[in-house]
Image (cartoon, rainbow, N blue to C red; front, side, top):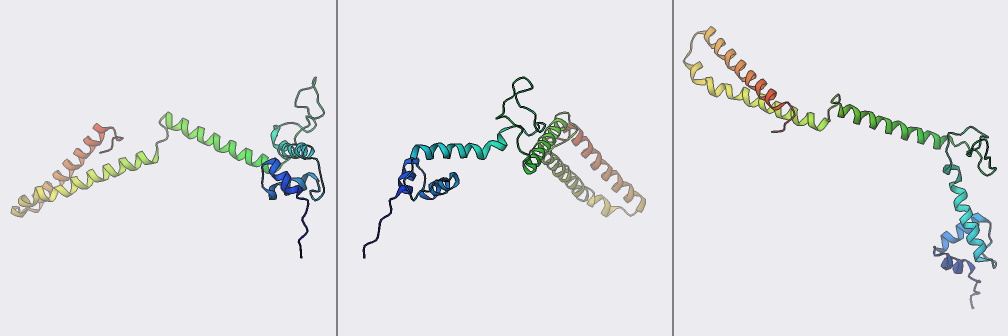
Length: 185
């Protein structure tokens, strides 16, 4: 049995428009053209173009216009330039975007006036200072082991330990003051 061939208007239009058959069928359906019957390709192109722009129209105009106010001003009123339809989702998204832009600007300003410090710089300095404290404290036993082993007076041992710990911490304070606290080792 021989299969009956359809006219193929959709395929021809898809080739003409340079889009897939599925996209062509969807777009023609949206503009109200029955593609199973012959239709004018230029008219379909005009309708498709108008529909594309109609989809974007609510978002192409400013959202901060009083309802019924003309975008051209009181003198040059144009009936085609009405206030955009209220779209609360779009307005909410735009407000969130503006809020985050303002926050980024505030953070940038605070960083420039040295009120705010970048987290990675603080982490690098904290690591460097922690390493200096650790090294200074761990060097105390190697310096005092022989002296403390020979000492029997508890007060002298206490004074030696206190003096060494104080020297290690003062050396640390001098090192962090000299580098300004921002230089990585």
